[in-house]
Image (cartoon, rainbow, N blue to C red; front, side, top):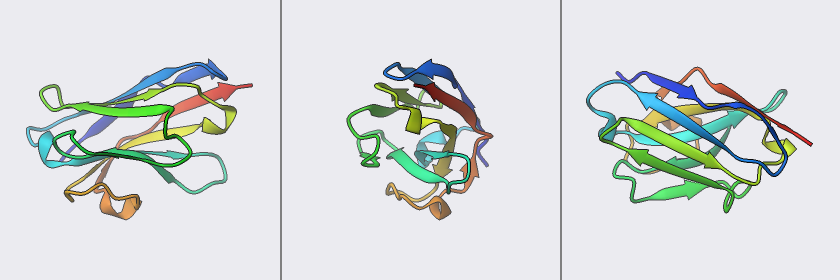
Length: 124
């Protein structure tokens, strides 16, 4: 069982930066692939980035590649999402998720545990 709590969301102007943090409970954090998803009003939840158990492998959606960076600290049970060059279309609720599967998958169905989400709003 893993409990996830996101923080760091807020309101930022276009072109600005935010860093989201996801804190995980439990002693088996390094057994989970971690992902970040987002959901905008009226849209489906979408994968934006994921990181392997060791942190050695990452994957990004085309919409955020080059602007967002995912990282993890297994000693601190934390995964971070650094978001730069934010755009109004990045506005959404951002969710942290944990998957027991070794590889990073884009489908939400592979992720067993989810945080409550944190709102990110980018003004133009």
